[in-house]
Image (cartoon, rainbow, N blue to C red; front, side, top):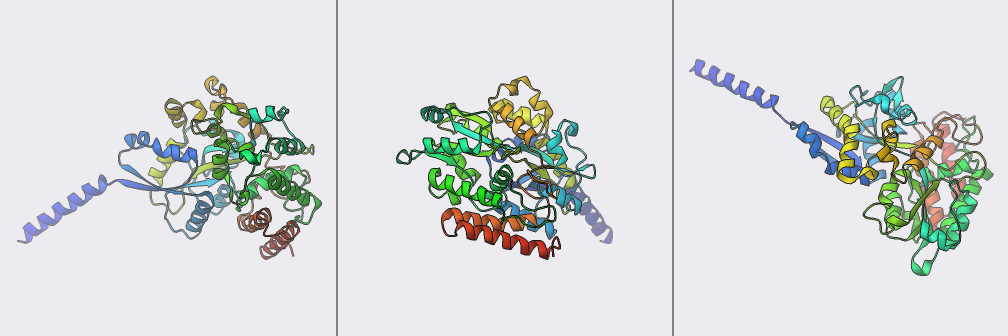
Length: 433
């Protein structure tokens, strides 16, 4: 009887080991709900066919919600996710803290654009692989600018943008000259406003980390932004982020939209009612030596708390590879491949035919995160300040500026609150006394 029991137990152990050997690995992937990421989800049969033992579980979230959940999970070592979609702001901070796994098996890392790769590297190690890179630029309706009797310069000024917006706005017809981010968030309205402020000569902090919202340059920035959107923006602009403005533009309600270069494939794509009437220009400036464009990459990274790092890196490598680019091109055309990450893409003669390809790479190359402002600053980052405290501070400031746009807070009070909030946070963090 004992021999039989021993034999059965041995057999059970062997079956269990065999089951474990063939057990599927399920990766939980946190991602943002934009078009490129949704397209990737639809194409993952290519990955799972080559990796039948890896299953994918998607958690797709709105941008602000994604940032909050991912940040909470990684800071508390919650282990909820195996792959994260994170931005250029988080990567160097989290990499230094040891919260991310260094990537060693990414497809041809030397092919990555230097401007994008450098923002994802800490002490020579790549901590995230870029899915797409972006700057920002002007997207405009060629028919409406012509109707207004104007010609869009390749490198417009903010003065021209205001003039064009005024002439293109036709509220009776539901057309608004300027669609801009108004939704509160450090990566929403504050991304746009910080980049814009750079071109107005403003800065978040002086060389001694003193906040600068009481400066004439920040007042000029907010004056311009509020006046433009109140005169020529759509109703409810304070609630509009990237996705909302994309929908407005594609439905024919925007004369101009100044936002991420990655939007170009969508405003000229099959879901756009104005696809054949879209032109592009560099982000505006004020003649001070800085344009109002940012630099960003949505990248894929692996949290240090994941127990499935080998499978996770296989997925990250696939999703950010040259093979994936060719897969998208074969299915949906070169205009729809993730832009702004690889030198080889911009050397490809087929991609060079895409009407916005040159505008995207020129915009990326004109952004300077090391010297982002007219006056000197102690930080790097174009539309963000690369310190851990920035996300919280800028979220609070973004709420004040969104309230000013909605009319529930005066411009003067919004700037005063921004100054006070930022001073308090910087004192608490030990930057200033």
